[in-house]
Length: 345
Image 1 (tube, rainbow, N blue to C red):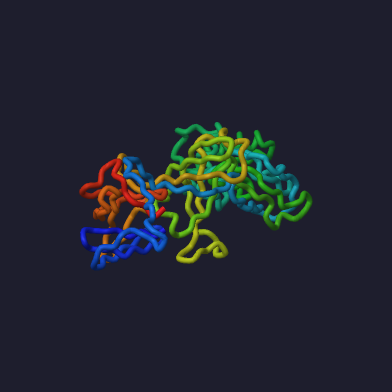
Image 2 (cartoon, rainbow, N blue to C red):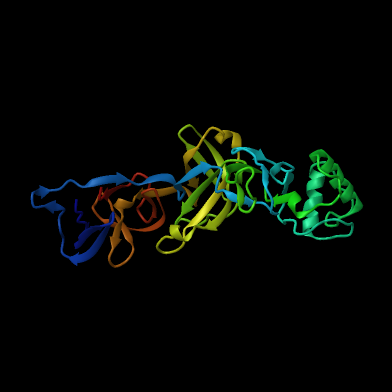
């Protein structure tokens, strides 16, 4: 319905726009009425409450996007794991010409043959760290970024466990370095075929939540942000692990969408869950503030906002604070908890 407010002897032309009433001050006193007679105004009360700008988004719970794994050398595919297999540090990813390619965890791939003590570099550090983590090399066996005689001895022990030639030499086909343990999503190659393309598609070995956010939804979303995750049968918490630009086909007006990956704090909580989940991204919070529905605001054409009190029909200027979930924080002289004001709906 339309609202007309009276301020002393000054009338106000009231127009409702997008849920907020705009008031233009005019000369003369105007009663609140319609052509059919007096119209009962709708009212609400000023309340003291907590407001939060948290937002809910729909995400997808699963193992995340697949990453292809290719052979590092030509040859014939002789062994592949089954889809769904989880492979950790030291596990075999595939075999080409019956030579196992083993998963090492790290951030630098091997890029040369390690065959003599004295070789140094970040790739050597990854090899030594993995040999140590698997129990073949002591943590104090020299500098981790240097290939030593102890490194060669550890490789021989590791090769013995793999039942391959004990050469003490690490060559390119022997390991595949990935950032973390993986789960086999799809097996794309076939046994007996040439190893000249992707052999596997791998994902995270633990379930993650992925969601796509538009350019206006990313405020405050950074790596490390804590989130609440809920679905029909349960709830848990997680943390934003990565934010990347979405593909061109997912672009949105006003800017690029971003793909957000969220790790789950308690993987066992989502072991049997799948599909859509609700993600609550926490925002700013205001506690114990005075608030009214947004529809009670009068947006003055001359600038600022007001509320119309029920007791005397006057407009009271207010300052607005946080807007959240259809409510708005207000403050002003004469505005207190329980004050009755007129609302548009």
